[in-house]
Length: 474
Figure 1 (cartoon, rainbow, N blue to C red):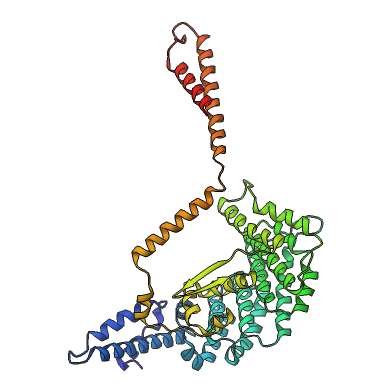
Figure 2: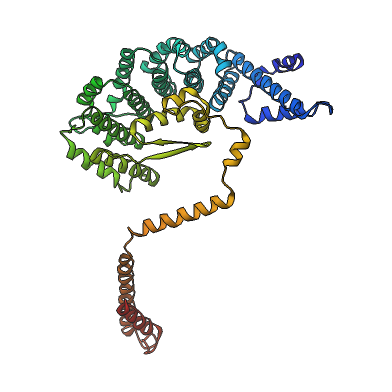
């Protein structure tokens, strides 16, 4: 525990809570180290400094928990953000295990009485709490308390739209982590279905009139629905395919790029799951679907933003390969001394869902969080001391040589697909146009008058002769 003077001093600062920063612990550690006696050994100094830093860090977390019930909305918001940052960047299982119901009560209060951003932060904090506790009785208790609130906000058309968007995302991940009954999972999926089907283009071709915020809500619901698909039984996946696979392509016509991408990735996920259940799976509307996916993969409509088109084309090239050939563009995630390969749409959807909440702390959780490691089949955490880690790290020269070799190999591979004759044809066309333009200028100057009359030996003729000879040489 921290010293009583610090507790009293900090207790008067509840009204000005700031989000947690990783630098706070190191700064306080330095202040403790400077006060030690010269006669204390180096090992004792390091151990005591670490203990004091840990105590100070835990005390700060307790302050944040207390401030989540403060009267000031700004203070509550700061406390929620501080807890979110701490849970996303550190493993706090032991600390939260003792205080899980207190934190749950605070989240429940903020969801019920808060507004907008506060509800959004509380919903995200609920997910992080479940991720910290893992898949067990503790997280089930937390989720049973919060699930009815999530569903009430999600289905309430008068609730704040940002809160509904956050609840759509949080309900999906919390269900994946903490739900113990598969029938309840199916019920939650039906709740999501009732939202995103409102974005379906009607059979007569007309589009529903939706605000951008409502479209984002439906996109979040679709992504959470797809996340829960990854844990469904084979029989339920078959039912879902018959019910939705023919209708999901209607979402590809949405005006919102995020909805189109979410729909494309969900279709690819469904095809992957269908082929796992039945290797001979065949879609009735396969050719029209592939045509639509190919159009999105090569979209060049001028009325769409360049960044949206670039992002869309990149995703739908992979989606088209998944539908046509059953392929997946693998991705390797490096963290510490380990690697994880994302080799399926199921694995990608799961990884993206966790990364949305832990953000930059994803690599740390992949290293140290037993629950997340179990989800991705990474086994127990690998413990490596700093000396061994430093010895395993490649030198700067080795990294430079590796990058140079990779760059050379990549350039050679790309050159195989580049036709240099295309550049020659373009140059010929350009030079021919320049020559024609010069000839027209000469002819026009001849008809203008004596003082503007074209003189032999002037630059246009030389330029024309030079261009002609260059073209002939090509």
